[in-house]
Image (cartoon, rainbow, N blue to C red; front, side, top):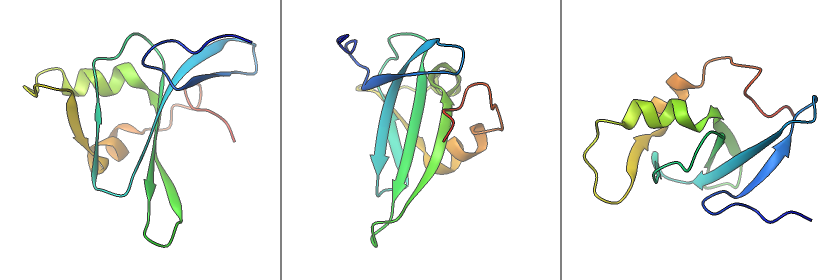
Length: 99
């Protein structure tokens, strides 16, 4: 059993057997944050509604999100709205974790 790398919540293995590190965020708010990404991996963001239902807002490259935020001047991480994440969540099937 492998240990999860620091700053990552786990990993997933694609249909080709390649391992991908993953960070997962769940929020009831209209934004979320990232800290400096430790490398290439998948970022998965869920919006949690008051009734307990959820929606996947972003499922793709964490580096793509970080590049969108690179010029933001936050001291302790980078905030991003769920609306901006939805815009970035283009249909990149090769990056997404399949159901």
